[in-house]
Each structure stands twice: as structure tokens, then as C-alpha cells.
Length: 67
Image (cartoon, rainbow, N blue to C red; front, top):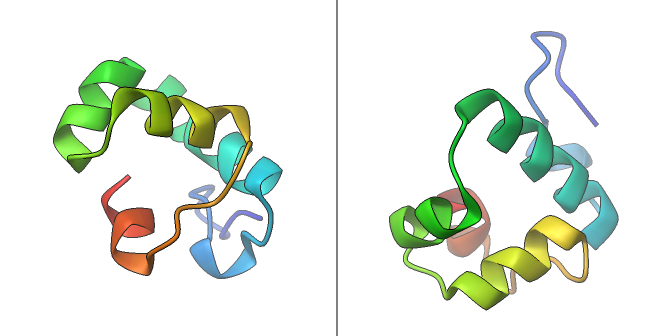
């Protein structure tokens, strides 16, 4: 799920759980809150929280990249 440099590889993320783990790893490194990430990605906080919990993947690739 990660590239050789340790960053999550989007091409290897296939499930909501994969996405949630990758997001959490990036969030841990960034120190941002889910609310801050939702604001930057222009997505609802509840939806962003669902992504972090692995409930589902973003519907659009553009949203996937923004988050």
C-alpha cells in the first residue's frame, strides 16, 4: 500500500479500509485535524471522517486526490 519512500501509493488503495489507513498515516505526519483536512479538501467533515474510518472510498478521483 505504500511506495518505497513510505508515502501511500494511491494505485494500491482498493478498499475503504486501505484508504482510511493511508489517510491516518498522512494525518499523523501532518498533525492536522480531520476538520482542517475537510476544509482544505472542501469536503464535509462527516464525509471526511467516514473516509478516515474506512467506511468508503471517495466517489470521484478528484476528491480522492484533494483529501
